[in-house]
Amino acid sequence: MNGVAPRNGHDRTGTPSIDSVSLAIIEQLQEDGRRPYAAIGKAVGLSEAAVRQRVQKLLDQGVMQIVAVTDPLTVGFRRQAMVGINVEGDLDPVADALTTMEEVEYVVMTAGSFDLLIEIVCEDDDHLLEMINKRIRTLPGVRTTESFVYLKLRKQTYTWGTR
Image (tube, rainbow, N blue to C red; front, side, top):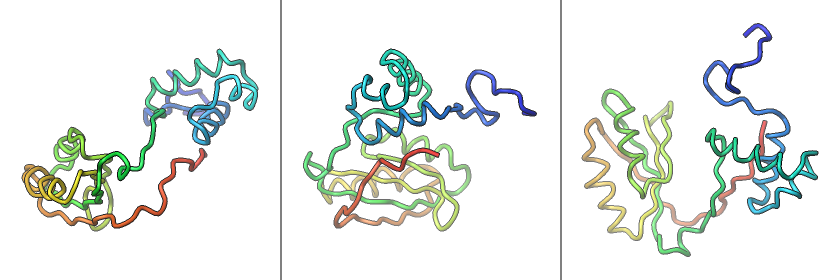
């Protein structure tokens, strides 16, 4: 870009550009998603109103979400699994179909042994079997699946900070 600032707050790949103050706000919210805007403003050197505006912009751009993260076991979901999927042909239609399934927490395209990795949260083993056998394996383009059933969750964190 030859030193020219990106247009519309995005870099040349279309990714929103984020300045150091917004990164600091994100880090504050990763530590405590309920931290008051006034306290965040004090930490980053902005007014409460300015923090509120920046947070809303980050939400609108899809840079971050503010959600309540639960332990699936405590809210009725007794079975979690990672599923590796190999696809014949274009990955996009399969990935798009998986994103519409409410049991699927995330979908990633990968390089390596699998074309896609997904995490699914189910009520029990019967629900997991139904998901894999009736809903995932029947998608056009799905060639193979391999499931990794979670026995115990030892760590789940969303505080990796920013770069």
